[in-house]
Amino acid sequence: MNSIREGLIIKITGGYYYVKSGAEIWVCTLRGRFRQEKEKVLVGDRVQLKPAQTATGVIEKIFPRKNILFQPSIANINQVVVVFSLQEPEPNLYLLDRFLVQTELAKVKAVLCLNKIDLAMSADRQGRQQLDNLIQIYGSLGYVILTTSAKIKQGLADLRNVLKNNTSILAGPSGVGKSSLLNALIPDLSLDTREISRKLKQGKHTTRYVGLIPLPDNGLVADSPGFSNLTLPDINQEELASCFVEIYKYQVNCKFSNCLHFAEPGCAVQEAVVEGKINPSRYHNYLLLLKEMNKRKRY
Ligand SMILES: Nc1nc2c(ncn2[C@@H]2O[C@H](COP(=O)(O)OP(=O)(O)O)[C@@H](O)[C@H]2O)c(=O)[nH]1
Ligand SMILES: [Mg+2]
Ligand SMILES: [Zn+2]
Image (cartoon, rainbow, N blue to C red; front, side):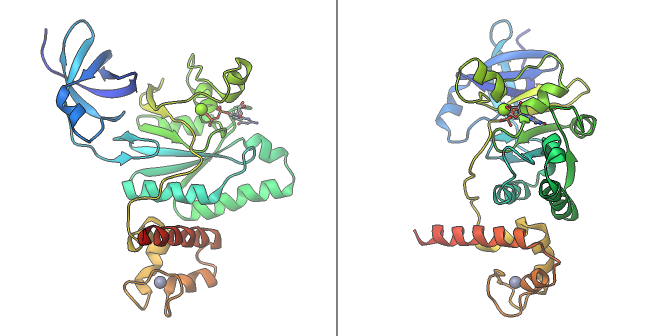
């Protein structure tokens, strides 16, 4: 009866850890020693628990992680669906590239989901060009791109297929439609979206924490609070290039092995930008990150 069980943390709130073990959910606390240790227990962690009373237990052990994402913080996922909207708000490519640095570092697959396609379709030519532009840039880098509308229910089957049999998280700025997409995919879910909470006069939208939700056709998905900025990753300037897949590809031909692709002579990356093989927006965002890292170094 009181035998040790294994499970997956699907939610952490108010000091309680919700562990899914088979079809059961166990509400757990942490064994004291975890509280002293610096390492935090995360949603997505696989754990061992010791049952206490009915459906409650104590987490005894955390199994080694496959990967960790820091913002939003979650462990052991197969993929991140990075959601941006085409309008309202317009995509911030610097934020997108900055986020992709994190997924590349964590070696987690990133799928790009461009939502509110209904707005882009009804927009002027510029709006539609923006969509083509994004598909061109990020598609050619090898990222899978989905175009969706939670509002007019378009592209949802593709999203469902991507999520199927995987453990995923939807991440992106707030207001892009992450919660709306999950509500559209999962019957009876009713996550708060901005519109609803405004009606209830609760102020801002209310996805406050990350929690894994079971999908109708197998797999788990987490909604997450939106981010408006991201912490600079804890890497040095040399490592940054490997987080931009195209820069990584071209840098083998740079004259200097420690080339940062900034203003060095014989730089194959700068050459590729001039020749139109590397997108200027991506390169620009790389330089912005490089500069920010340089500033950090001095303090
Ligand atoms: N036009 C349009 N509006 C959408 C779409 N998806 C979400 N919205 C709206 O965008 C706002 C923010 O949505 P929400 O799901 O809360 O975004 P989140 O912060 O990313 O979770 C709400 O008012 C939604 O109704 C869409 O595909 N098209
Ligand atoms: Mg939300
Ligand atoms: Zn270079």
